[in-house]
Image: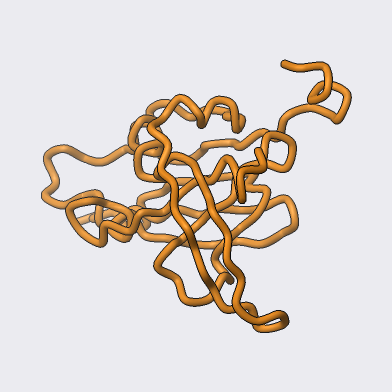
Length: 156
């Protein structure tokens, strides 16, 4: 770690929890190990009009797939019952379905951005970026928790 980063404070951490084979604590530096995707995003902000930014980072799907979601391999389409809850340090929360980010279903290219407009997010933490959203309300800054859970179980 460079002295400039060390002087500014510790790197932000993200807790991956829930129904995962490999829960983890990640930093922006860890997220750089996955393939990086770059996207330009325009979204409408209710208070200040249209905002345009460039983001880079791994796909949320890739990071979570690597953590080993607890899909039941004998249940057909079991992954469709899974939800993803993300929280930011500022108290904002977003809930996504696994099907939304799964390449076999919604294929939303949701990013865990490690930089915005070429500025690294090491200290602030990654941002959730949904490039196809018209409004930026689901763009969560400073993600500190990502929880994956199956929301329905067949008890019959």
